[in-house]
Length: 582
Image (cartoon, rainbow, N blue to C red; front, side, top):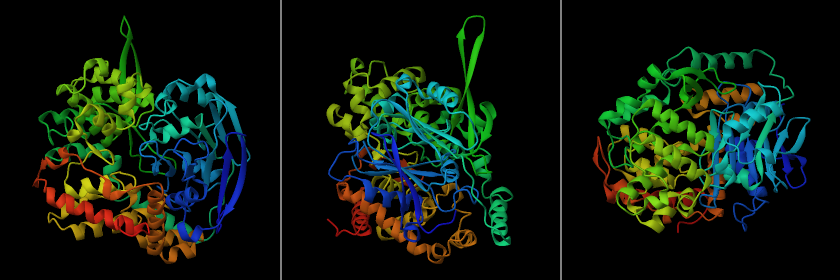
């Protein structure tokens, strides 16, 4: 199984045929993010838009997938419908292990199926099935049907889209095995544009583990650190929802479209509240012993005489922020009910929540009429937001179709750009200050996971643009190494450079283990090169006025520092991608 090249399956959806490729570059990019950028450079058509049939949809895993705990993510890369530029989205679930057991380092989909279809991929299987009868079905309904169509479990992974993806919404996600998602920047729309309702990955082969004591000793040490120390306790205890109370206490929790950074009603949606009242069980991605996925429940009365049903819904901090505090919804079960509606439609919850928060404030300011929103949007009204979510996913009128293409596109037509909470894409849930705002606004994925600006700001109150840009570069490079493996970033405290090198060495990747710094620089360069080649202009990014009005535990935002930091980071991004500053 250890090989010095990549084994990649390219599937032409127009013909339904696949081609196995052996590609060089293992020692330069490792896999995951690096491999995705390599494959995008090879297959993307830079002269064509995101929805051109020949644009690739890429899924890539890393060299340690299947060998060590928490090497459980898959990188999905594509040209984004949000900005028509290179994008990555990462997800857990079972897809990484399924690809490993199918003996593939990556899967590349090009072309467009003749009709709505499901694609089955295994080590000895490739089948494109007509699935027109599933088109229009929500994610949960499609999931039930797909599990009957593709029998077996364990090594099977089902990736699927909902109505949002079918309608090519730039906010559409790809649902991964029900509780995980390729969430940001519209990967679901790319699947929809290819007429692929679902992708079933079947890990129908096996692979040998390394012989000898070295591997078992390193594995045991990794396993000990993630299960027998305090390092991962936060994630399996309250999980990321623990951040709700912490950020509210710091006055860094976006509330009501970032008009506030804390709220006295927050006790209704803290991690403690969810655990006490709504937590059913913990779950985990394949290959992970931590169990960070917290699954709650929605209970609904569906007829008289006390007839109820319940559904299970996974929750994390980001969904709670985006459809909870950001929409003024401070009841745990109301949040879960709204989250259930978002899940069914196949929308990215962060994008949808922040977009509806802007729409609510725009309605309050009489910039948008109820005739356009179809429902009377009001902060705190979870039931009305459920109806709005369906309008947003299905694009039922011009307003919702425009909003689904990005909040700032809607603000450009209706007004209210000053309070559109967009940092490259709809914001993540940290109102911690300038370093976070610029980091997300300019970062490669416009994600809170590109760089940890919020943690930097807690430790560095000084406003030093040079130091912050140096932090961006170093933190992103370190994360690029991990996302090329492809490790869960929750484990970044476990997988130090030393331990990561031991992991690589004991399974046979000696060359990769020798210089992880060089690997990080190479992957960083390739990712930025891909983004810049598709038209990204970091110096042209603007940060709406609302962010300059934020006040938190540090006081107010310094607009001068914000501008200085943005300009300096934009110059550095050009240099990282091999271009001269604009």
